[in-house]
Length: 241
Image 1: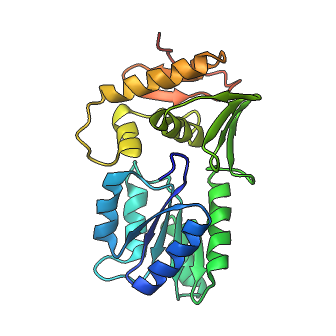
Image 2: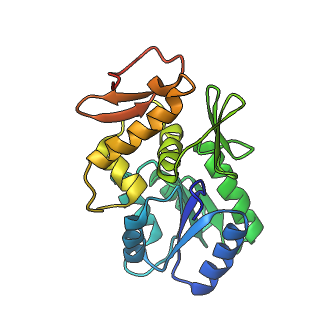
């Protein structure tokens, strides 16, 4: 997987649907993880949290709607955008879905092009990227297609892990992220990695940004974790030395 690729988790018990949609999404440049049910989907989280989840409503054991509710109750996954695939097109069904935290519906039957358009629209609304596939914060730009980072016109050179960290921070600006949460998002759920690993990589990222005079944008919230402060935000946390 390219370090900047957007991760999509596709959960559907129909192998034909999985194959068709994964091909469409991969051709569009997304990194796709496939799961046949909720149990398999949860296991895949161990390899890193997705940027977006596509769920089939009608699945055995645990439905997509119930899984969406579970995801919204979990602090770690509550902000991940969710698209629900469903044959239900009644207004009451859609209301149930939105009340469960669904971001959008794709009603069967649908074309692969329609799904792709909805995926791109949901990602734009979630602020994961803008119209041209870039994250921007002040004069700092992260290009999700080329995996490059720029400050003004200059290239910011980052390693793969630092790139993923910056992408995560820029997708959630001004939020304080604990070390354990960063570990789960960047390295995968439940991986036996020391939390000091986060400090090392945040330090490397900050050092790379310091060359452009913006290392202070990454703030240490003592006892809590880290946040990337939006330039001009009057609220400042404690900064690491």
